[in-house]
Length: 369
Ligand code: SF4
Image 1 (tube, protein in one colour):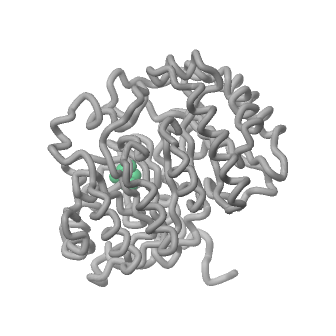
Image 2: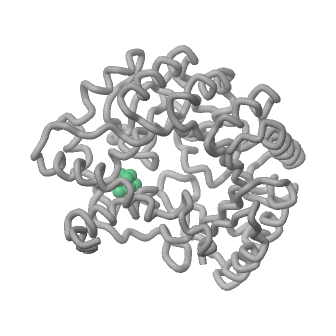
């Protein structure tokens, strides 16, 4: 069980993709070259900075954060003024969601609160953070988000230090409590989500982390397998996870659910042993999201950040230049050239599959409600 039946209409349920039916249809018309128009993305995934204050050994962007810094080039941070203009452009273009994440740790960027407050009336905003650098000013701005993901991945100080390379567990507990306080004070609908990537070092403390999340007063606990099988990660390997133990803990986590605390143990993008699986053939859903990075370029998908061959085009300093390459033949060719077998975990795997099964094969007989 990944979630309770009562909460099946949740953000982590990949069937959400079916609500993008109009986008899927239009993407396929463009891919088949029946039109030159490609619908704007639903979301922009924005990395404001390529720096991080932690040292997580499983970080999927460690290649450009640590080991191959020269690949990033000189531009490691987007100016705040630029991001404000970018938000204006994106909102006007029709983008509905802005997820500010990394790459690096977005809270290192001093302009983050200003960008959130500028964007909040134009689109839904979300932030993914390690929760180590939450000032009062930022906490207040984060309350204006639709959701805030807190990447914690542990239930105690020792494990935190082992997997993240720093001793900041007390700090993140303090900061989560601060966010919960601001949520109560402002009474805004932001979802605070305690995130837990399952690793060999923390696989025995999933339940303990879930208890901690509930005690802290966040709204959601989300656990999923780490992606440590991509070959651009130092020391990458197939993880050995005790599935029986993990599944037992997942079950116990769900027993902690209440009307104010929801548990999501998300496994459907991996196989039954938490290894990467590809149950689709083509990369078709990537135009749903435009990832824009601190180097001023956009990339094909969030799992291919800073990989030169997946660079779609530039957006800096004039963000409207996106329109010069979005929907171009080069863009279409970049998608057609993706060899799915070379991808690791695909964030959009189920959306790719839905396009194949629902749009291409009409597996759901869509003319018959
Ligand atoms: S991981 Fe691969 S298949 Fe998935 S969206 Fe990215 S490029 Fe496409």
